Length: 54
Image (cartoon, rainbow, N blue to C red; front, side, top):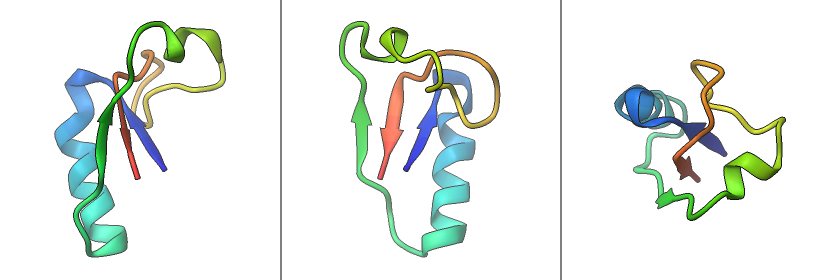
């Protein structure tokens, strides 16, 4: 599972495709879900994620 902010979503999709060779399911994280778990951050920076790829 990948988490990404708006700035890094394209990079996350590309990396997911390279690793799994299938398109990811892309889900927008609703509300403050990302803010409730401090350990969940964008895969490429320390920003709170907006998208979850699985």
